[in-house]
Length: 533
Image 1 (cartoon, rainbow, N blue to C red):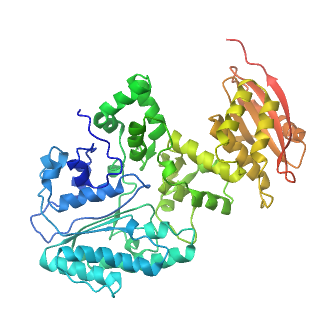
Image 2: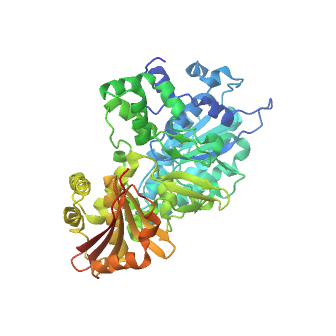
């Protein structure tokens, strides 16, 4: 396939096509959304909502829909929809970008909404009064367009941006929410004049009236039919970016399969429905081909400081971030003053669906890929342990070398560095705080670590596996490390691993001191050597 340009920063469909950039053809999905099988022009189309993380192509999606409804068929030459039976009728489009209306000043939000509405009205020689509330002007605009031009299409990008941007300022977020509640409520009131509605966002705030009834909006966020509407599937990656993949492989001296495996490990893994269909992060993938380096491209465009603060505020156990089960209800209802950690991490792209259990009807979440696992873990560690930015990798490498050399004394000496700046004012559950830091360090190292591992007589604090060893670890706060070792032996935590003849088992007791806020001591006991092959 022809190697076209990388559409980095290109958010308009027309700009992408006319600039000869690579467009991954999603128009068959769009046909299923926008097509109306009726000869009656008064028949209404769908009303949809789609949530996806930032920089996942939502703005391009809205722009593509706009081009379809404005009848710009020439832009779609060669694409799936151009060969379909779509009628290409032209409709007036009210397209609003709420990211450009986001504001920490509720009064300014009203002003910014009116500015966008006025710009659209001028295109159709419609007069709006800027002194009136934006919901009044939106109602006027829809009525006027419908009466003079025809049924209206409403496309709203990042509908929740004025709320999301103010989550660290609850009062402003609530005020912005009330403004949007009145504003979006117009869409329901003017439903008879509307041909099609599509909203994108990150989260679904239950108190915004546009979501007060499922009859109004069809939420396709977790619909299996649209699981791959945004992001690149494996097939799409290999087809549309074939030339770029070859070029990347050559620059890194890797064969095609090796480079594909590495791209998949780093940037694939996002799953948005029960179906086992994963997609690549489009932003990171494009920057990988451009920079020819496996970096945390997407993560670096927005460090999740607010989310990390929320984890601390709710005293959430960091190891429980992954592999926790949540119900479908958790994804579809958000309150500004009662935010839930796991659904918010999922909606913002730091977690994704790992699997769905039809019996319990629970979704298990996980980090999507290497990029997010590494970058989010590093940010959590720097926040919890207050490790100086930039030194984390250096210390982690020293820990890896110590484990490889089977030098636990050196390992724990280096480990103490991460506890040196733990805050004095720890709340209840201090032991969990120390355990979280320990877990994050091992996770950052890429070492396999399981926590709170169930046995028939309790739960093991931590199990760490390396190439030749299994470390069974028990943590104690303000108690001798020997107590942890004794607990492992007394409850026989090691028994479930005795059949692992390929690895030696080492019991480890670790003691934390709440006064010095660091590791006080550690004791180890080798249990058995691995058998020779």
